[in-house]
Length: 119
Image (cartoon, rainbow, N blue to C red; front, side, top):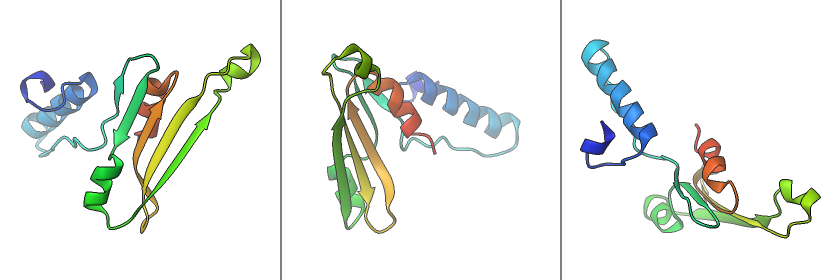
């Protein structure tokens, strides 16, 4: 379904859109798929994972934001002695303290960001 809607052409989105159509047509429960906060990834080297709003988009929606940035050494690198690092940024609505965007660059970022995107 998702590939013919001209929206996000991702398998999880298509599955959710199909479930919404089924609930609407056959379940008598009008349902719309929510396209906000869909985790996405770039399978590059290093991988990139992102969900929610960028800093720029958050500033358009919220009067004030806070941005938290960190880099860390993944736990799996401690025994191997690897010096690889992972970067992470959280974009937060200052008034509610709600995380409205999360962005990662580093090994497994594409997988980790899916958990960050859960509500």
